[in-house]
Length: 395
Image 1 (cartoon, rainbow, N blue to C red):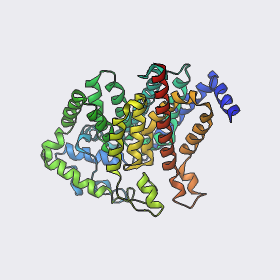
Image 2: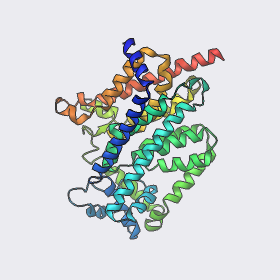
Image 3: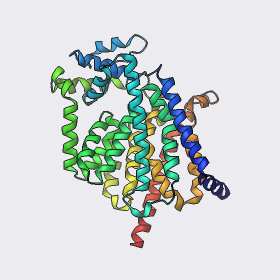
Image 4: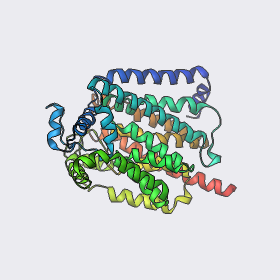
């Protein structure tokens, strides 16, 4: 195992290996963008909502969904009102051009997310975490751009890349005294509350009042069009009502292969438990209470992992866990024997689930990614505690 680690380390020093990985990732991204042009299943919902708001009608009206066509309508519009600027942008173009706009936004967001993950490695707040060499500049972008979750988001025209890029950027600048920029980015990330909620809770516990005030004001500005059309109270009432329908859509019900969460894993195993929302809140409060025992640079990865594990997510939402890779990047040099395990976990995590379904006819086994993410989260937490203890001893 150690020889394998040495071999990987040796190959990673070769310039041709680095260039090949990054160029290959860019090629895959371009191919996914071209293929996805004929799909954009989720973009259609954003587009129709945008058309409705441009016309001055309520995007949360169930009749609006009928504009999607019988083969696409899955119910009401489920995004919060602050999604309006994106929807209006898409609705300002003909459908064909709107798909191009969404593709460009997702590709740009993937690039931003990759860049931020590199910055997290190159400029961690804890100076002892800095990793020498330029490997991260090549391999981290390659992995972020070419993994199946990124490609799936682009194919569907989903918003997870936009949210992940805004959320990680907002976190990065929040701890570098750029609270106005951070607040605006956090506001953008709220278009998917299930991913951004725990980060906002953490900032609330940290009493980042100015940042949160900017985020609240920006979110309100984003909501202006729906508020004017539907009313300042009714628009949120109707959004909350649509959320109640969201869990009944076939892709969101427990037992669906598209759902990712510990609750869904247990349900598939025949164990029914209620939603774990309160449990993840308790976990975050405990993390904050004992935050001095953790490395602060690890927290964004841990918060996002807890969000998807104990919340409601889909498999493509796992791209939001990109900061976990950055965290492991600075920890693994101190745990050389764990490198092989980390590479194996990443390979299995990225292996196409649809391919496995042709060989495995057991839905419980196909929930393996939940176990991998849970193990990676616990592993990162343990390494964070150990490294923080070492750093404090040296100081």
